[in-house]
Length: 89
Image 1: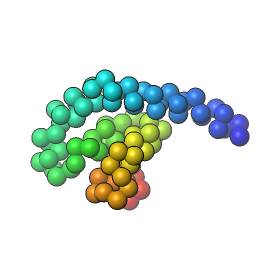
Image 2: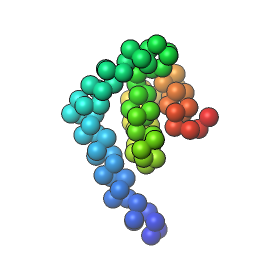
Image 3: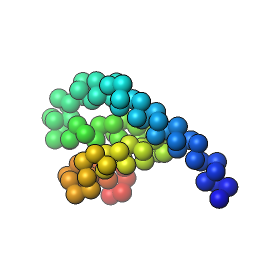
């Protein structure tokens, strides 16, 4: 229980930061810049935020992966790419 109490504020801050980046349009702008490169390699642009944030923070990438699952569903091809970049495969 002590660990949960220590981690909870950090997770809330990460969820808020990811939401702020998404709502402000910065993440979409960066994604639109890299979309031609991603389509060249046949990578869905929807997983770009996860590719961008995963090397920086594991907890933040969890928030991004959950957001991708919420927006695109768990039965989509985007989910498979999301799992791949998150490290489940």
